[in-house]
Structures are given as structure tokens and as C-alpha cells.
Length: 371
Image 1 (cartoon, rainbow, N blue to C red):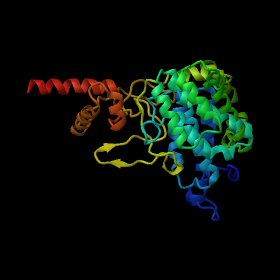
Image 2 (cartoon, one colour):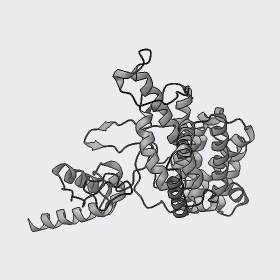
Image 3 (cartoon, rainbow, N blue to C red):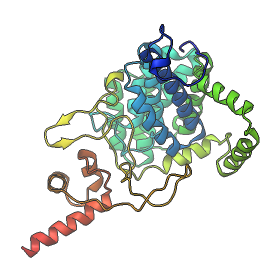
Image 4 (spheres, rainbow, N blue to C red):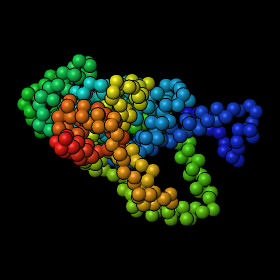
């Protein structure tokens, strides 16, 4: 972590010390923000707060593109966030993080884990996570009753040479039997995977503390004249939120509830390309690394007033453009009517949902019939 600068009175560029440039200060602040967001994402993962994880990931994504994040430390943090994202979505077979559509989240996570083994001090924990990832990459397919997909996952994992000796043979036997209650799958369960990854995150944070902003904010709150009011507010928020000691079982249940959203492609599993945008002739690819919620693009005109006091007005209705109509036609031509989630994967419909696509297609079909 960068040296800790003491906070003084706020200054602009003209008032700064001659020996320190604004760029240098900006670099340090960016790294502090990334450290804070990294810790926040680790906490959200441990507590199973998936919605909060996605929101924090949006901010982390922006900061991660800064040229200030040079060096192996921040490269590893970006890689760890990518790994946690895939593990959280491990049971969602409709989520895609690689160019290859057959690579499911846990398969992608297993590949990333190869580059993260150097960050694990405990060799046993490292080996446990490796086995848990490989077993669960196959187990989630069997749980869905898809033995063909399970065999495909086995083949891909062998090709990537991810299997330790003997495990491939055992999993092949399990897949042939199609036994979702096989002792191997029960021993290396998804809940145990979450526990192991949580242990890894705890150990990593202990060796690589990223809590400067947290400590600074804590000190500020303790010395604040309004500490009583802040404490009262914190107590109120804690009553509304879930307890910090949320069990792994609850975490797993929350993960399984996220299976209804559309999947979004990731272009690569290399650190430099996690969030890189590319053009593909007439198609617009979605933002990589994170799977965007259906309402990710919100109009400035939204209803109600948020907690910060900023007023949000009624949402303005979005118009369908000729370009979006063409995307819809091409998507239906390629995937067929009713495959709205697949069409959303290939094209950028500016935050529209599958239901909106269905309604628009019905309108276009009626117009065609009338003419």
C-alpha cells in the first residue's frame, strides 16, 4: 500500500506544496479508493450481499482502468475481484465470462485460480480450493440434470490441464453414474467452496491490509461533534441490514436466487482485458467482468427521493430507434422468437429487458401484418 499522507486542510492545485504535483496526489487518492472498494467487495462476498457487490463492482470497474494502478499488488487485486465475481455466480449456468460460450463461471474461476495460487500462504487451502472449484464446475451441471454439459465441462477442464492427479477419473465415474448425491460431490459442496474462499480472502487481507481510508473515516467519526447522531444513524441502519455473521448457507441461497438475469459476455480472462470494450461490426458488446442488471441504464428521470435527499423524477419513456429495431430483427433471425435473454447477450439495447423486447417484437409483427 502507498505511504499514508496526513490529511490537512483542503487545497486546490495552486496551493499545493511545490514538491508535490496534483498528479501524484491524484495517484495516491485513486489507490486508496481502490483499496477501500476492494475491502468492500470482499466484505460483500463474505456476507452474501450480491446486490451491494454488483453496485460496488461498478465503481471498482471505473477505478481499475486508471493508469495509477501499476504493479503486481493491484493486478492481483483486480484478479481476485474477477475470481470472487465468478464464484458468486457459480451456480448460474446462463452467465458467461469468456468468449467461449461453453465456459461457465466456475470453470472460468478455476482457470483464474492458477494465477492466484501465489497469493495463498497455506498450501492445503490452495489445494482445497482447486479441488472444490473443479468438483463444483461439474456438480452444478449434474444438479441441473444436464450430464452432457457435465461431460463438456470435464473435457474443457482436462484440456486446460487443471486437474490434479486422480480427480479427473473420479469425476468421470460420477458423471457416468449421474449421481448428484455421490460422496465426492457431497464432500466438496458449493457451501464448502464459499467457506474456503472466505478463508482465503481473510488471510489475504491480513497479509495485505487495505484499510487506510477505513481507519481514517473511523477516526473522523470518533472525533466528530455529531458522533452521537452518527451512532444513532448507524444503529438504525444495522437494524435494517442483515447481521455481519450471515451464514454460508444463506449466502448460497442468495447466490441461487440470481439465476433469472440475462448473461453478458466477457472478452477475456487476462487482467488487462477484464473491462475492455471492443466493436464487433454491427453489434455492441456489454461491459465485461460484471453481469449488468436489467435496469443498469437508468434515465435521469426516476421516481421518488433517494436516501441522500436528491430528488428523482418520473422515468422518461425510452424510444425505439431504427438501429435498435434492426438489432431486434437480427437477434430473432439468429436465435428465434422468445429467446430474448440470448438476444440481450449479443446486442446493447440500452437497458431494456426481455419483456420490452417481446412487446416491441409483437408491435413490429402487427405492423408487418397490417401492411
